[in-house]
Length: 295
Image 1 (tube, one colour):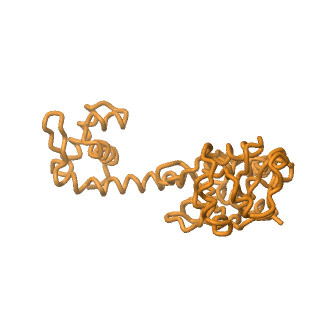
Image 2 (cartoon, one colour):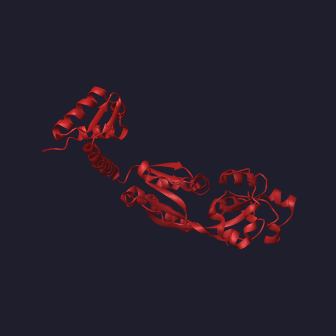
Image 3 (tube, helix red, strand yellow):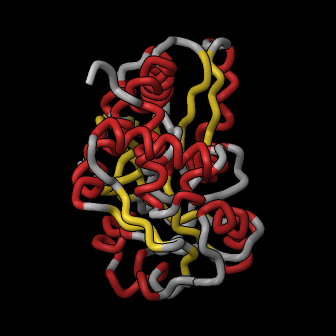
């Protein structure tokens, strides 16, 4: 075999993974006749049948079942190599996934600085609380909040965070000062259901975890409700520092607890050191280093 019949192998994978000639043709955007021709040429080249056809039903022969995994691996590696070459430059599109709360409360006010420093990088942000699957997306990197140790990615820690309750001045004036954790325990707290608060409840008591105001289930809405005087929100320093400085929110009690979780910059190994990925990572590290921790 003097050369690899890539078109025929690609056609074989499309049909074999769907067990349908029509489905393979649709996936490749070609006619069923073209698909049949490619499969017939590949079978003639190999000297063995790859499919059994029973009317509209299609099954793989033993040879077809043996060939499919290798073809899928090979095509996957080719796609990966082509993508790495296409992305391996210092400018162009940079796709990064992150939590919406981090984008709106910490990153957004600072983003103009990145665009000014790197006008050749087209930063595109995908907001999602779910952990991005790099193998099934076009994301180059992500900012994650967690304990680290994620498989399949390289990671660098960006910053620690702290947990604290916040509320509006109006709420505090109406409901009076809170002088102790015991008094705070009597109040309903607004917070997102998550293990990220474990450090707080180890200090203040697990029983307070049950006194959760469950109407809202996302960080931004909870902070907005707190700002509007609806109650006390349990939040993180990174999300509320600017609001506290602007006096849109206040601290009803001085207690603050260092979180078990931290911010991390993560990327697949083959993207981690791309110039544009490194530029955004280094910019984040620089700006987090300037971000003052709570007193």
